Image (tube, rainbow, N blue to C red):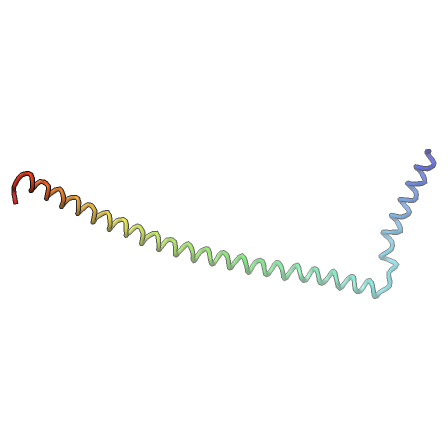
Length: 107
């Protein structure tokens, strides 16, 4: 039993060593293509990163513009409420005067 376990460990170690050494046995064409693929991935990563920065800046600019528009809209809504409140207040004051005149009989 011990011999079988030892033999398995030796076989696994041998296979692992061969698997790690196999890329070194490849001919120059395969190594060159693998290097080109690696460089392609590296270049693609850089381009993706730059594109991500541009997208982020676009979102930031759009957010700033939306914030400015919301601020303007907020002001105009606030002005509308203020004006409407004044008109309602004036209407209630006039209504109060009219009621007083009606009940007191003064004109």
